[in-house]
Length: 161
Image (cartoon, rainbow, N blue to C red; front, side, top):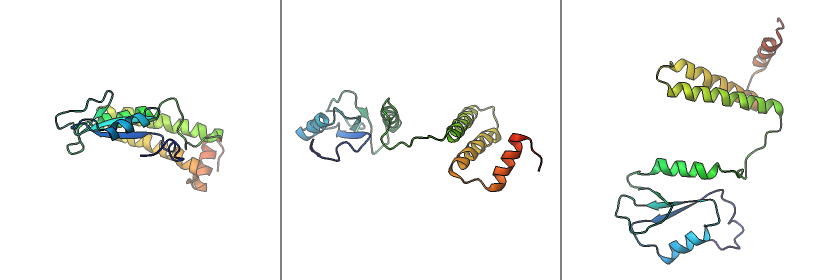
């Protein structure tokens, strides 16, 4: 247990508090719940495959042995991490060309997701959108070759080789 004066207390973006729901809350469990109540946290009531003894309001019920509740736990974690607060270690994108490329990549990824969800659209369309998104990422990180850049310039500006 970390104390309130612990310098590492605020390092985590999210705290998972795992409680054995098949037993009554003990003083350590209650202390952990009390000490993390002001943090971004997800309370996990483990052993949902057994008779619940501890009633923990708002807890996500899971069974680590059977895997029950894991999709709900993933959703709870994603929901807590994607709140209004920005994550501590997120990189800022200041290059406007990179911002535009990221927006294009997002558009292609969204189209790929939608196409994959539709049973009527052939997988070639999904792959085409994924390839287009990857090309945008490659351009951002500098993985494109000079030939690719020249082809891109000639395509954009209608200049013959």
